[in-house]
Length: 438
Image (tube, rainbow, N blue to C red; front, side):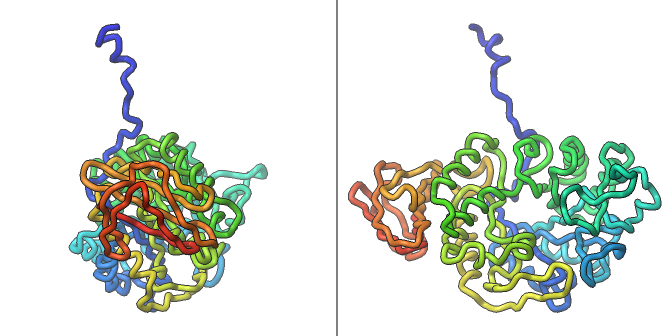
């Protein structure tokens, strides 16, 4: 068979977008503007940017910035995900100039800002309700409807079969990139909006500047032409179930098998132990992961994926933050902040831990406690990381069956030089972890 005949069988890249270069070793930090400071404003939040830079955050994700609907509002302040006008700024947070200044200061610090965008639905009193009622989905009675099957009574669904709506929403997304110089979007329930809409949006945004797009969804098809990163909901579920004694380490094998085989290598998945939805509706990371919370955090950073901090985690925030009322975070120095700072510094400097195509694939290192202990290597021509996690409430003496992990390392958290070989046995306390680097 000749070369020309074989050409038709050559593999083609699934991901056709170009990730921004600055995302290669990025981490992400979510700001719930309402609760982030006592003032709850962009200007007040801006004062924290140097601290977030020192923490190691690269991407700052802001809650939706738009004016919130009043009709059928939940609580006294309402949900930022019930948008009244896509071209407006919520006066609770400040002005357009305040947002621009926030973005400018972030850029000066070498950080990037993405806005939370709600394309699937609007508030009942969004300006489009009167201007373009034909752009809304209807129920069987012909009335505006919230998203089916959910208790989202404060919003109504848009209809993306309407070309006019698609152009309007695309123009609105372009406006904030042009006007406020933002660097991309986190897109709420992205899978509820047609993928071909997002594919076109990415083309039009990239024509303005390279952007970073995060989908609140978990699906391979969104990576091809639209999104740099999707959520790792199933990672969260797997680790949560292990921490709660509902599953063992094999649930992580399932996740990472799918991650390696079903998802393109040039893709990113956001790993986290908290976000605004989990914190408000299900519980804090302390409730959700118990004694295993530190191990979960470490795996979220040294495993494949881009790690997220939800604001307040670095202060050890023990509360479920209110969603529809004012409930500011109490800031304090905390060991969780120190842990994240150390981990983010490691991720930035160690190329094996970088994101997507820039990072190294996890390779399992079999051990003598396969249902309780999770161990793997990530390596490339420059760096190597060997990580071991005891995801159980019992101590284990751990030995390893293969030699990929052999060599001289630095124990990252103990700052000690160690030699790992056939005779190595690690003693791990309940929910303990060790990370070795070279």
